Length: 348
Ligand SMILES: C[S@@+](CC[C@H](N)C(=O)[O-])C[C@H]1O[C@@H](n2cnc3c(N)ncnc32)[C@H](O)[C@@H]1O
Image 1: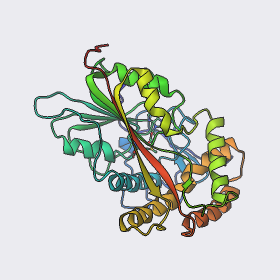
Image 2: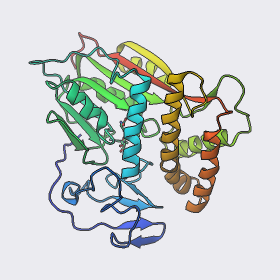
Image 3: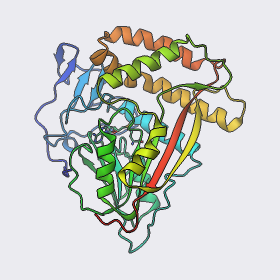
Image 4: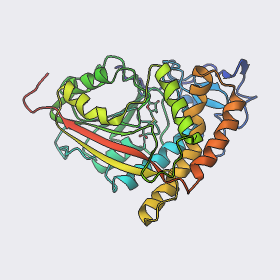
């Protein structure tokens, strides 16, 4: 992988909305100049490297243009805010743990940590704050100005599916979170991570199954919710980045050479249906996450791959959102942390 440092000023932005190309001035609610949110308005001078600077607007959402089309989900402020909310959900699920791998960090111990697909940068920044003597490097197809970033955290634009140029036997931890549906070749990714991890270092995945579970038959087999899951899985598979059943990751890590591979499975209710106070709180945040995320998760896959029109997607998603809010349906997603170690005697 190559490292990209943001360079001064870009030359133009063009936005596409369906067949129409519109300018920044004519763009309103999704304008990069002011979206009315708390996230800082994007600074064009920071987004301006020739590979990273030009974003694509489509059907009202913003997408990456570096290696365009590879990642089917938006990179706009609405999505970045949702990622921060999802980080909070992960913290609730994992009891505040940022990772389960028993990594070695500390003063004098060079222990770089790599975060693949850093998104809003919140995990990388949190790790850098927790381990001030470690260097945390984040890579992503989109560059983001994080709301806050400690000095030992560095964010770079890069494609993790390309050859990595980092030193071999280097990282203490390679972290991958919520990239399910974004990766074409997981085996290759794990092989590269293995090569660039120091002997005794770790890899950790925190991934969601894109399936719905229900233990008490309150989810009818003809539910529209299940139909949405079928459609989104079909589209992701057709785009050659399928949603993987997370139970496979353990054996795939072992196949790449990792040992001591462990697996932890957690339930995340889709809304406030549980009686248990903690699970109800989790469901409270999850339904917000779903309401914010549904359009971004669906729009490009439904329009680009399944051939739907934007308005039809929006109308359909309103119905799906309503179904997700139904507390009579006791459904949940599963979130799995899988982590493994590169053997001590395995210098590459
Ligand atoms: C759903 S977000 C998760 C963000 C972050 N890991 C988190 O947990 O908050 C997935 C991120 O992976 C990035 N991504 C997808 N494919 C990638 C690739 N091939 N190389 C680098 N980043 C990638 C996307 O741009 C997006 O920011």
